[in-house]
Length: 348
Ligand code: SF4
Image 1 (cartoon, rainbow, N blue to C red):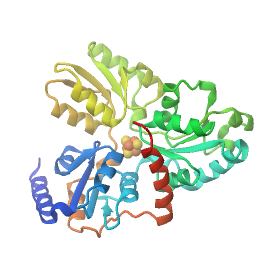
Image 2 (image 1 turned 45 degrees about the vertical axis):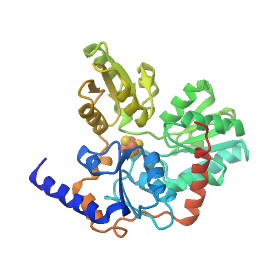
Image 3 (image 1 turned 30 degrees about the horizontal axis):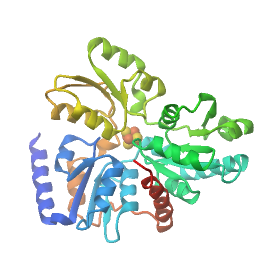
Image 4 (image 1 turned 45 degrees about the horizontal axis):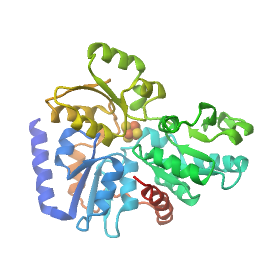
């Protein structure tokens, strides 16, 4: 650590001490280690938001992650809690691929063809609050990468079709897992008329997948897996469900960020694990488990997550409840909350 960074760490620790239990710093698994080390909780976006909202003492929630995560925390926050982000420009490419206005237009077209009450909208957590609100307005649901299969089952018990967004890969991999045949899935490309489909195709489809993806997780290829298997013949390969279907099929285990953390923790000492997810998490897991060989499938960094640093973290801590406050319109919050509540009703 550089001299300047040591100074920043000291100042952040002083601010934490001064604010005491009124402050909670949440750090997503993909944050840099120096940021995670200063946080109160590390985890995935939803578990962090829940943790903060259930803390009766926390007035100031500082979310070290990307914007949709801080927005989710603001939706779940109790009255009197403020959510701040160290950098409001820390967005998410995947979330940006589903513009709320364009999604609303697509939804109206799908409804006009498939008929009212035949489609359930389902938003991955990695989406703007307005997208979650659209789901809430139409009896839809939000899901995470941990509970996507349960959310699909919930939706298909109610209506015969799912409109899933914004990650086509999580949607496709979940549908595969549930045995939904390929011919029952269509892709909705927002830049083509009818999403690039025919009316007959939309009527026949069970799953309509929004054409969006995570650039961090779609960098991994089958070639990377084969290369690592040659170098580490005894390794287990574990990947995230935002990866492409071909990568998922070549993996030994697939699961959410929390699944990958638990998988690594539970692996026997001496084992070798090749991991396909964001590089900061892999580096931290390698440092925390020196008794195991942890190998990145490929170095894939999320530059959006990397916008959060000691400098901008200190700046928000010097302005508690004032700077970079993340707010969500009350109507949007209420409707998005409905879709989140449907997710919370899912059986584990
Ligand atoms: Fe978005 Fe992908 Fe970065 Fe996650 S890793 S914040 S989905 S761009």
